[in-house]
Length: 270
Image 1 (cartoon, rainbow, N blue to C red):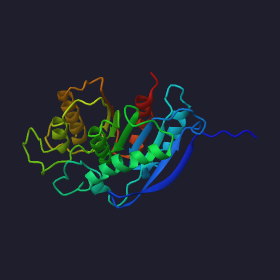
Image 2 (tube, one colour):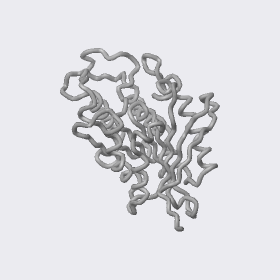
Image 3 (tube, helix red, strand yellow):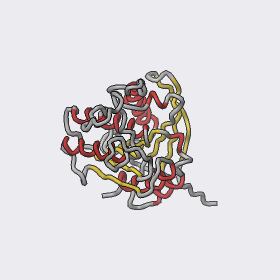
Image 4 (cartoon, rainbow, N blue to C red):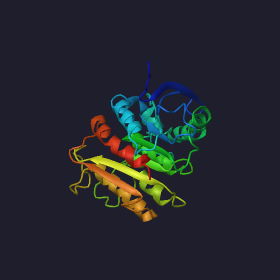
């Protein structure tokens, strides 16, 4: 009997000295993983516990069958009860103290998890063909880690990113609103790193519009990040791709619907 698989999958955990806990992960590889003479690019994803809710089994299977997509290894890193403290910006917690372990999480990814993947699995050296993505607060975390460690990542995917993350509460009529941590993080970066960006927002994610400009905050915040990246020297369109989903919500259903397009963007053959 001839046997054919759609993908290879495993679940496991690694102990992190930086986080002082076991971190669970799921790894999915193309069906030719064992036979391939060459290593595979990597897609890291925060909030790997949402694998089922994001319909990733179907999405990854279809991506592996797509001849126009470079085969890659998917690694979903699961969050636990510490999510609100491990995700965030590594340079600073927000004004409520959330994200106070984000630097430790970043060190876990860079100092522990990436070397672990390179040692144990058939993956390419981390640089231009590694991609990091996340959703909501996990998207902010992915952006923070990849942006500040561009020697490991070439592309970043942020779905409904929590770019509202700020050093102090929002003050009405604060037109510049520079308390959002990501904006100054981009501005103060030493150099222009060779990174490409994929941003996604939905028009029905929320109704909040703190500056009363007729644009909901999640879109406003994302566009301000894009503008800051442009000031740094990134091209839009070009280095930056932005996808706005009409009627899209802040939920797994919306994000799962755009994931196939993101994977084609991230791993499309030249």
